[in-house]
Amino acid sequence: MDWQPENRRALARRLTRILNAPPTDALCGLAGLESGTAVRIGVTGPPGAGKSTLICRLAEQRLADARQIGILAIDPTSPISRGSLLGDRIRMESIAQHAGVYVRSLPTRRTHDGLCDNAADLLLTMEAFGFDDILLETVGVGQTDFAVRILVDTVILVLYPESGDTIQAMKAGILETADVLVVNKADLPGAQKIKTEVEAIMRRRNKPGDWQPPVVMASAAEGTGIGDLDDAINRHGAWLQDHRNATAIRRERTKYLVQSLIGRRVAELLDEAPPDLLAGDLQDAHDAVLRQLLDTAPQSR
Amino acid sequence: MDWQPENRRALARRLTRILNAPPTDALCGLAGLESGTAVRIGVTGPPGAGKSTLICRLAEQRLADARQIGILAIDPTSPISRGSLLGDRIRMESIAQHAGVYVRSLPTRRTHDGLCDNAADLLLTMEAFGFDDILLETVGVGQTDFAVRILVDTVILVLYPESGDTIQAMKAGILETADVLVVNKADLPGAQKIKTEVEAIMRRRNKPGDWQPPVVMASAAEGTGIGDLDDAINRHGAWLQDHRNATAIRRERTKYLVQSLIGRRVAELLDEAPPDLLAGDLQDAHDAVLRQLLDTAPQSR
View 1 (cartoon, rainbow over the protein chains, first blue to last red):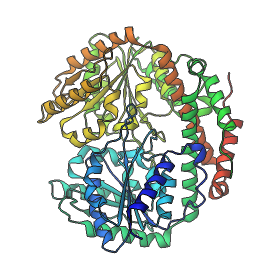
View 2 (cartoon, helix red, strand yellow):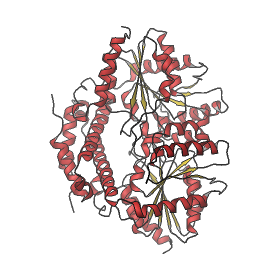
View 3 (cartoon, one colour):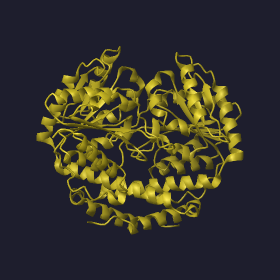
View 4 (tube, helix red, strand yellow):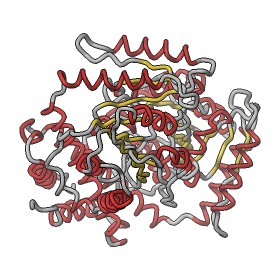
């Protein structure tokens, strides 16, 4: 079906409800952890890499195959003002007008893993609404960003020539979690150098039989390299058909979900704790939170 | 006392033991949460901002007052290889030779908050060893980095002219947690523009009676602006004498510690969980981890 206004509104409401669901309600919908009716594509990289523009171009490319595409764009939120940055979203406005595309901006809130609350449930909901592709954009530098890998099929890491030292700092981290690498703004000086560097790192790390992550040169602004990126995503998808370990994926997602649900419950309990408890003995505060955690645990339904 | 080889070795061993202490042992040493015998200075900012070089210059500056300075430099660690990046540390080698300075590199491991395990205990240990200043370096972009603010007295955010879009992305986050801002590499084009932008943001956000974070122009490589930075730190320290809310600080630290200890315990329990449990029903896995969390909770000593 096309994204008529009434469907868009129903989806928007559903996503808002899930995004805001407290952790005690968040266990209910997760029976189908590895359902996988959609292609889930994570797009990550440092700020300024051009992820939003690249996602627009990629969505246009994949729409040529008459696909319905959902874009979930996770925005960093201030720990103090809780205001989300909407600048990037404005860049997506043109693609958001397309009948086959749905765009939603999601705040990170208190999570430290680069995702938003209840991200797993949001992805399942998008699948239930019939999207063929789900593009999940996260801002990441290094180790804060590997949670996305747990929830998607293909991780695209977007780099760019000016990022220089950023890439140095990322080498040990996120490079290893990427399935496809994009050097965006490939018309700028230094693009080829980054490609060469990254390919050398990837070759060193790759083991025989592993997926060999391709490095795609692109310019989202100029619209070049998007076909190559699309091919790389499809090749990785085909490779996964033969190599996906559903049990291992389920284990990783369970670990991630249990960890994040308990973490969020602890944060809630600490926010609700009597001020005196928190200003007193650390062990007392710790024990009180643990007891409450068990007393208020969500029950099976 | 000076940092003779025997003291350095004893401190190094102690820090290693604390860094590697499991969460069940980590509650013991935290009676003096707000002890504060040292000036604790957090230095954060995006990769490539020149934090390490700036810390060296700042340490030299503050050594002129015959202080003993400890530098804890937190390095991002790969989630896969667990290898720490040591490039930045090499830049600190010259200052590390000084008898009044102790430098230690610490891996972030699995924490997502930009700190290492048991960071609070490590700071207390440094204080117990008699350091006057503790400089804690963390790599941060935006919201992953506000944990450092909870554990230190003064947060210095290091920006640089090329960081352009990075700063855009940081505006909503870490800018608000900084007590002193440094535009490093101030000899490069665009430095004054960043200063003007940042000052405008800070002015808009500041409330009467709040500390007004100064924006210092510096070049760590050229050695300029370091005296201004030192002055700014000292002025913030003097301001804190009159405005520090010890009870609120204790509450924030308790919240942070309880959250991170329970989070680490949950991660441990998930790592040790039988594979079948994790591949089965999510609710069962969640309940089993919660039960174990309580059964194996650290006891008061």
